[in-house]
Length: 288
Image 1 (cartoon, one colour):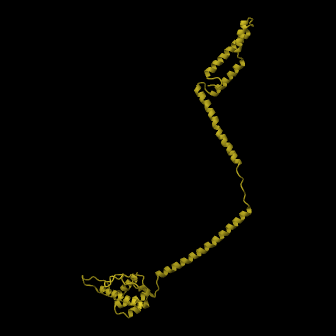
Image 2 (spheres, helix red, strand yellow; image 1 turned 30 degrees about the horizontal axis):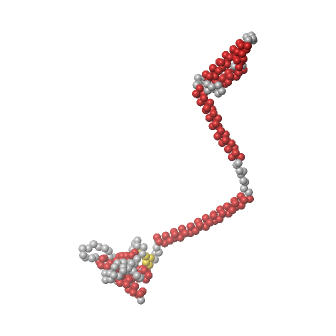
Image 3 (cartoon, one colour; image 1 turned 180 degrees about the vertical axis):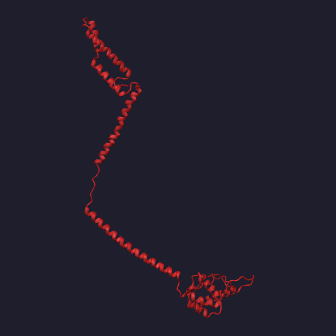
């Protein structure tokens, strides 16, 4: 479609008609002036449709411009109208971009100026931060010194645990039960049997607070089954006393015939019975 003239064939037909009328007008101008009224009326009717050469040139100029805008002549009317419609769409599509640019310019104009801080305030803030840094460094040094002192104390205690005093003797290796050598010698001096030695060692290792309200093995009594079971004394110390007393008399576990107890078993039973009696005696003394 050509704007203002319809389709291309219609425009060509209009141009051809205008050219024909212009040629006829030129021819009629060269003819003599009609004298009859009939010829005058015919000429007046024809003059109503007279088209000048300038109008033809304007039409042809528009035709040439439209053909140049349309591109190749082989494009049909539908493609021409599609191109024109697409041009309108592109024209409309540019509007949001222009509005976006306008809003961006408006935003740039509304940017607030940067507020420069006061130099004196900055100096005060820097001075305050420097003082905090110095205080933190001093605290760090203080805590490091405390950590170092605590580590030294821990190392000292661990050394004492790993290396006991030479004046003490471990009753059984690995038991952790130590007793002064002088007390061990005194216990052996007045002992003539493993049970007596065990009683002497028991007095040295257990205090009165450790034996009150307790039993030797923590078992129920056959004679008094209704009596509640008392907790046992320190089993580590108890077993160390029994083993050391038997080892002092060179008694070791031995395999014997079934039903025949070994000397080791006999002496161990005597030691446990003697310690049970000693424990009861000590409890009675504290109760009086």
